Image 1 (cartoon, rainbow, N blue to C red):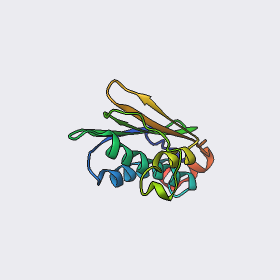
Image 2: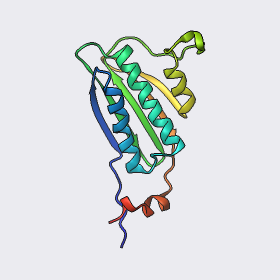
Image 3: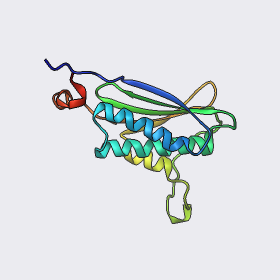
Image 4: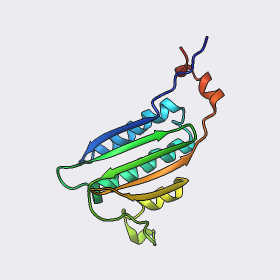
Length: 151
């Protein structure tokens, strides 16, 4: 008898204000995507790129020295949400002109807006949360056939 093992639909982790937190956040998200069967898919790659962009923005613009940011991942079987919480001031925005003159910066939220189905910014008591969603209805039949899902 095959029994489908459902992975944890919610994961969250704090990351320090340091450059190595971006690849660590991406790895954390990748493990979540593997558990849900989205790793290696086009949409899964979009999720990972957005995690990198949001983590980078939090480090560069949102996390004061000595503080951390929180990466939050949730999947309810229909919508996958990525959210990054930080305690810094300011409100993120999509740059109006993203071209070569922008240099290396200014593309993060432009990419998030382009790759996700929805995104937004919410206020917190201290700081803000930037989130993005993907409509990813689970293929229950394919999910239950996956070797890592059955005992």
